[in-house]
Image 1 (spheres, rainbow, N blue to C red):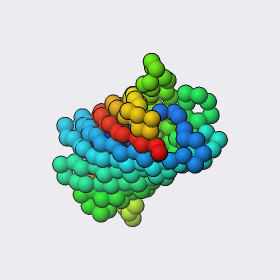
Image 2 (cartoon, rainbow, N blue to C red; image 1 turned 180 degrees about the vertical axis):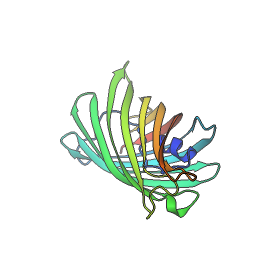
Image 3 (cartoon, helix red, strand yellow; image 1 turned 90 degrees about the vertical axis):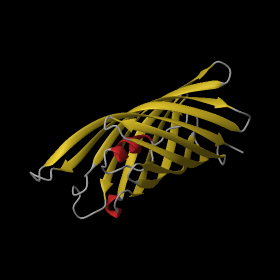
Image 4 (cartoon, helix red, strand yellow; image 1 turned 45 degrees about the vertical axis):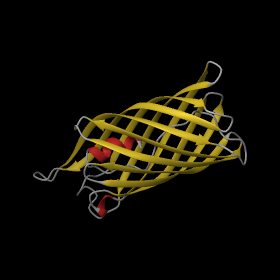
Length: 214
């Protein structure tokens, strides 16, 4: 929900879900995990959003996994949903790369539908005997699906830097907590001059999630 929190607030094009809520670890081949989470955030426009997220991942071997992420976001003036395909690869212990395309729909008008994608890296390190701390750097982009791309807010980009912790609640269950900062850039047409202007905003978010791997 991370990048989308701020872009919902700014009434721009919202990217598909790009929540982190995971460490650099990958699932073993044919292993499945299911994650559910919730969170909220705000930006420098003094508005706020809340939302929920879900994820299903499957290990495919070679320190890789694939899956589907989804979320729903609610602000004071809109409800937006999104879904994305996810790919994760861990080339070395403690670091993983993630990427995937997605689709976002809804908002204060049906013309806010968008396609997008993300690319990022996650680093994590065990702390003590059970907990794992992690951070990430993730870039997301969203492109509106309409004839006039800049009519209601054009292409949007976001950069997210979270920090979080994963803690096992049992042999098959793990709790995640995450805080992060967001920087967003959006291209919007000025209604008076009809020129395309770039706008920047910053914000923050918090989220929690539970992951289950049978």
